[in-house]
Length: 308
Image 1 (cartoon, helix red, strand yellow):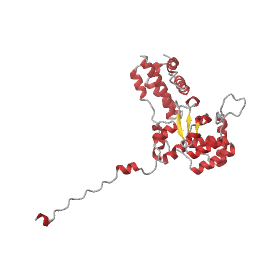
Image 2 (cartoon, rainbow, N blue to C red):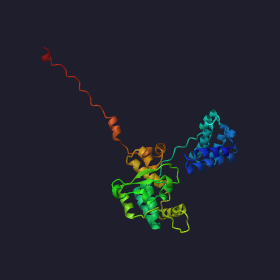
Image 3 (cartoon, rainbow, N blue to C red):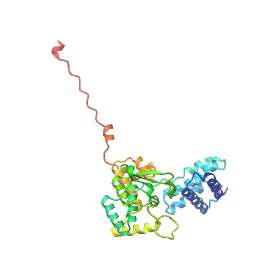
Image 4 (cartoon, rainbow, N blue to C red):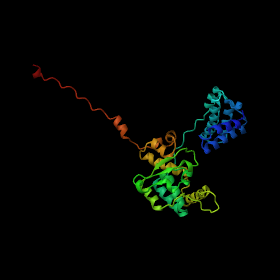
């Protein structure tokens, strides 16, 4: 069976369970394998797939991206195996080809003074850039999650003033997150958001009348971002650094990795790779577990007079 035909059958039966973002990745993986010379499922042998992955490694593609392509092929093969169209032993052999990612470097994050300096530079470029940066730092949003926020997604008014949060909606999210999630906000930041008095609709509306999309373009935000970075001299700042800053500050304050992963829409394993070593120095749980046991007093010797 041709790989393209296998992908079409897979998409037809799983289209309701897969996001458009995932389907794009699957098609990219199939096209990459076909370009290498693997035209059909008979070519999905361990030797040929290993050669394909080795070529991707030589092209300086990251291990996570290569494993994503392999996962797409494995998903299609697993689908075919359940229908008796792909041998189980070959599928098990392909699963062993995952590439072990290198140890990630320590995350780069900003200090509070650097955030203040950078936000001043953002304000001098455009107030909406400052809003975008603040949402990345204080809510840990991905770039597209931030860009597609609406006023209705901010729960910082009325009954929510004491426990403010924002909601990342799946239907407006163009990233890999496949479900809604809530991100709690600090009350002082929520008060700042309330003071902006946003109108209903997108927080970052398009500024071009002829633009058919509702949101400010990625290119515009990126150009603003680079200009602000040049003005303040913080050339190492990226959108990823802003998101790392959110997680790093929480971890250094003692927030558990499981909670941070929920706030960010990541797995706990991903957060452990980046932030496990950034926790506070001590923990009362450790002190309680290793608290020294008080010594048992020795029995008193019997009085000689009483013994007589």
